[in-house]
Length: 581
Ligand SMILES: *[C@@H]1O[C@H](CO)[C@@H](O)[C@H](O)[C@H]1NC(C)=O
Ligand SMILES: *[C@@H]1O[C@H](CO)[C@@H](O)[C@H](O)[C@H]1NC(C)=O
Ligand SMILES: *[C@@H]1O[C@H](CO)[C@@H](O)[C@H](O)[C@H]1NC(C)=O
Ligand SMILES: *[C@@H]1O[C@H](CO)[C@@H](O)[C@H](O)[C@H]1NC(C)=O
Ligand SMILES: *[C@@H]1O[C@H](CO)[C@@H](O)[C@H](O)[C@H]1NC(C)=O
Ligand SMILES: *[C@@H]1O[C@H](CO)[C@@H](O)[C@H](O)[C@H]1NC(C)=O
Image 1 (cartoon, rainbow, N blue to C red):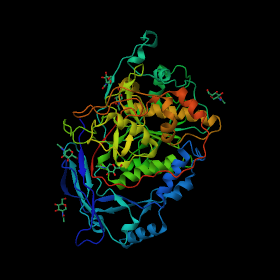
Image 2: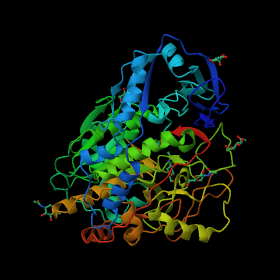
Image 3: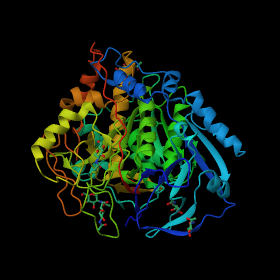
Image 4: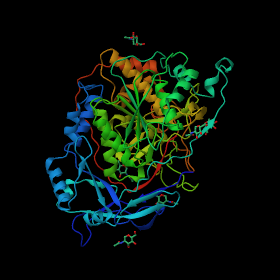
């Protein structure tokens, strides 16, 4: 049961009588206005300023991520990335002058200075933005959002300010959902069936089927980060029990570091999602220094806050895995681009950013038990072209097939990047008119890759439970990337960074192509997994040996062509959020 969706028509228009750039939205009917927001209550607003040269950032990202480029692996410094996204001084001046006229002081909250934050009473915000902040309630949950249906930015400020969040963006905060797990009783190793891995997944199964090495990593400078939200926490004690039971080959269970972002909790009894994510990173990428980032802010802003926190570090985690997400239709183009450009900055600096694709097949959400079969609903941020989206499979003991819940499809916001065009076109040619009209074939298609997603044995607060979901696939694929980085660092090569250009140009042969199953949703069979890339399993699941051979042999080429960079698009938004499990 997962409620809460909305539609927000994003209209930018000039209305009579109000001078300035007005943005007006119509939220979907599940959002009911309750009452005007209390004028004395405080609003925390983030002002996003236009980046100096975002196309330059995208070009630089592709340049260091394309194995054909002479600059492959020459990731950008913190200062180089900031120079692309920093606002022009004129923008900072125009916006801070405008705020100062209203006696508002802004705090800079991103390392490049492209985001400012203010805390003001609702009454001030209503005046400043010609807004009418109102408390809206989601009909199907207890969630309330304080939003306005209209904001106006004065004409002399508008060119210097992209948008302000949260004003007209009706994106639900992350919420816990009933996780699809069951408590399992496991026989001791000596009594296990030889085909144990056909039923339950343990590290040894992943090591066996995906050829992942058991030798602990040892490269200096290696690292992996695990995102955590909504008070999910992993405990060291659970991890030790997990290692004692399932990694007896590792005498001393590695520890992981917990870092709090925006007031996230740093200790507590283990919860399912965080325990899964930590046990299948530390338990697979064993000995790669692992940091759990516990983000206290559950709204979409929390995900941006995490990236801003990371971008402020001199040493980033080389891999970042996230098993949480949203539905794309809650996002307008500007807000969506902020996320995607945040991941582009991480990639440019050499971090491989991986996201679980979601567990809702082609259709994003269930609305009171019924589905809207009009269009498929992409998840977010999997539609961002600058990250690697990981779908789910099952039966990796053979034959490996698409997990029926594996989210995949086509973004309605982000255009299809060049690196995947041929692979996606081949798929579209094969399926012909299947699902025609239900998805946007010119959009960025996902997932990129996949991994087993069913029955992961996880130690949570004293019990072993089995967990299903692409939530498991992302940490596993991320661990594979971390171990590939280990080999590269050991031989003096840079880390892999943004891996999609490599995967689509040369990586397919190093992955297990998954060619059956599908991700049905709401009256359709969804997208079938077929030979080559498909929107259920991407290019396939990892074969570590082949991937290692591939990444060990890359010789940067010399074709240094200008790369495609996404342009802005407008899409009528509709949305919801899910907590992937
Ligand atoms: C402001 O919103 C409230 C609901 O919160 C509504 O009743 C009122 O009519 C709105 N005022 C204006 C001027 O639109
Ligand atoms: C997980 O998937 C397996 C295989 O499809 C299924 O048997 C099991 O019931 C699922 N578990 C949950 C909790 O959904
Ligand atoms: C690091 O691990 C690799 C792979 O297991 C091994 O070949 C190498 O000898 C190790 N290096 C050190 C310094 O232990
Ligand atoms: C289904 O979604 C479409 C597009 O968002 C919308 O126009 C239509 O009203 C929805 N239908 C139902 C039954 O909710
Ligand atoms: C389809 O996606 C493109 C971006 O690739 C976008 O410009 C266009 O508006 C989308 N169309 C619809 C109907 O969503
Ligand atoms: C963990 O287990 C203890 C003891 O069984 C129980 O009291 C506690 O509520 C559990 N914590 C969580 C988060 O489930």
